[in-house]
Length: 335
Image 1 (cartoon, rainbow, N blue to C red):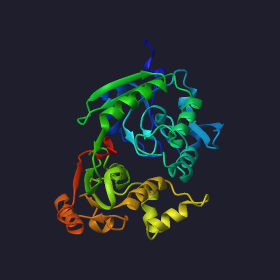
Image 2: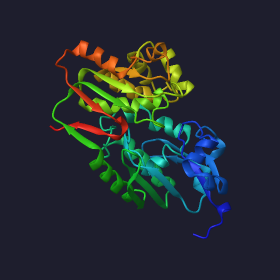
Image 3: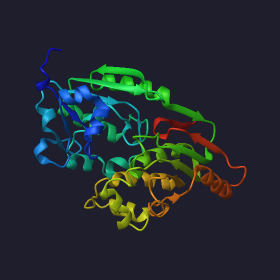
Image 4: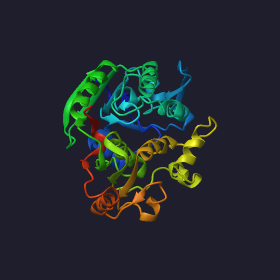
């Protein structure tokens, strides 16, 4: 639009994830843009990068990236896909948690939000996770959004652009129609993945694939997930949770205390929802079996071996469902 490149900043909405490496930035935006524009990684733990906007009506402290808040024109660019806490990614999620501070994300990801029954995949109505970060994003302000819905091969299916709420809602409605698959009955065994690179580079991220199977697996059933986990378990804080707690019940009891906090604990809280419903077998070449087995799940050498073990448990007449790309599918019972 005739603006000088020096007046434009590209802010990577990392949330609490690690900063993007230089080669990953090039992978995302291309060499020309990486060389031409100022590109910054948001750091949720650096107070010098944050501005305080007060508390939301639900009492969440709102810390948002200073570069964003000082900009005269605020544009967010993102992807709309199913999300196992906020209903769908995209829209308001680029701001919270994307460029929010640690204190904001901590409270927004606390059990008082995540344990609500409507904090679920594809659920926007009555979902406190969605309504809270929508309020925070509106408080921070946004002039324009560009969001995309992609297909199984990551090609654009639909672009939505414009108002932060209305464009997002249109994109989410389109995405819902694409990703829902209804089945007639629950299954003893559900086989899935975390949709491949870059969504399965850690055990942390692979929990999303496990969650996708929950709506259609029978209570006491088996979920088999395949993921690369090429970068290991996840953050050191997330990995430490498995050392702190003897089992998932011990962890869940601990996080109900308002004084308890370990960064990334919310992903283990979501894994607890999976394990409450079914056992989990993990197939990966990114972590050794002995490591997987201490993550409250069970290692398997291959998908075939995991299926054989599950059939031995549930019997030869056991029903089996396959969800090739777990995080991109919303399976539900037709009833």
